Image (cartoon, rainbow, N blue to C red; front, side, top):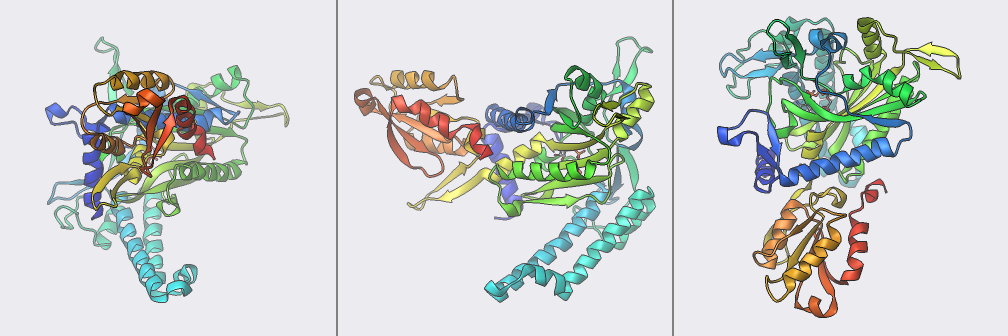
Amino acid sequence: MSSEDQFKKIISHAKEFGFIFPNSEIYDGLSATYDYGQNGVELKNNIKKYWWLSMVQMNENIVGLDSAIFMHPSTWKASGHVDAFNDPLIDNKDSKKRYRADVLIEDHIAKIEGKIEKDIKKARKRFGDAFNETEFRSTNSNVLRRLNEIDIINNKMKAAFEDNNLEAIHDLIVELNIVCPVSGSKNWTEVRQFNLMFATELGSVAGDASTIYLRPETAQGIFVNYLNVQKTGRKKIPFGIAQIGKAFRNEIIARQFIFRMREFEQMEMQFFIQPGTQKKWYEHWKDNRMKWHKSLGFNDDELRFHDHIKLAHYADAAADIEFKFPFGFKELEGIHSRTDFDLKQHEAHSKKKLRYFDPESNENYVPYVVETSIGLDRMFLALFSNALNEEKLEDGTYRVVLNIPAPLAPIKVAVLPLVKKDGLPEKAREIMNLLKIEHQCHYEEKDSIGKRYRRQDAIGTPFCITIDHDTLEDNAVTIRERDTMKQERVSISELEAIINEKVNIKNLFI
Ligand code: ATP
């Protein structure tokens, strides 16, 4: 199946099984905005729970925060968002489609990388076990030529962005012969900057109203509360503040489903450190965050680091953790060494001191910050697309199964009476009551048991419990496991312990 077809399948499965709906669908939708359905909201909440647990609960020196979406307008002046939160956009005159100029160039680089991967694949086939990829990469003339080509493009792009030279970006697109994916033409407009913040007005009386913004990131709510948390929490550096919340960006190209939305959710953590220690902490958080992703069962070849070439205005080092989405490797999380840029800017604009007095060194300084910033919706998409599988069964039929890690599954247990008579529903309700205080459970008595199993497979329910006539005699039920489809007869008295053990979020930490 082509990756495009695979992606379409993911989108339609998400809708059909109540994970994600297009927003305002009855009015034909609102572009790049989505709603999470009955199963989607559970999965999303579970991802949040795991992140919060790993970040806040498991780290003594990280605390949480929930700051408002609206902030004083000076916040965004200080942070640089009013002046510099821009995307360079370019239009194709024939298709009238708008693109981010840097993304067009990065996609071009990805194509060259794809060719390198192809060469490697071919060589691996040819040389078999004797193949040494590192040696091949450093000696093969085709690969070396392509790597050099990528270097040249990256350097040109970096220089153009550093000089804010939009004409040079335009010229690079022309020089690389990049065509519009829709019209196929090279008929490009000049490159322009476009601010991504949504503006609105505060106050009901005309004239009194002043422009405020929907926050484009949650980080600034953390920065302006840095001293509140440090003082009231008696925090010593290094310490972190974590927050989960909505962010809004007027994205130019808002496509690829929930990958790029105009309203989305971020899970961010700002780690306040002593100046000069940023390299150490930057490496620490890169490593920590990669381990977190790997704990969710992704394969090694589905995740990678990508070091930024075009550094944001606040960063002295930045890397993305990229995930292999159905449309290629793309950013899932950013790890940024933000220096003291934000706190210093807020000091300058607010005229309030945002310093830390270090009792050990007797020093007074503005802390540096290393941040980890992950898009909750992108994390959802990564998990969901990775988990959706079609399996051929022994009898030649297929089943669609969502192999989501059990602790994150929207529904942990489906309780299924074999028939809806003879006292089986009543017994099933007893089991529901036993389990539902701890776990999200689902009760269903319609359709054949086979059909009910398939529906639960499709939403990723790790356990189905079937109540049959024997249950009334022996107080035992059949428990079926999603991934192996193995069925086991267990006593009702053991059920709670079995389920608690298997869906425990602790399992993800092992
Ligand atoms: P991109 O380069 O893809 O636009 P970014 O570098 O601007 O992303 P950051 O500002 O670093 O993104 O935001 C942190 C995280 O927030 C990203 O890693 C991503 O997971 C998420 N994110 C950013 N923009 C969006 C969006 N429009 N829709 C969904 N998630 C987003």
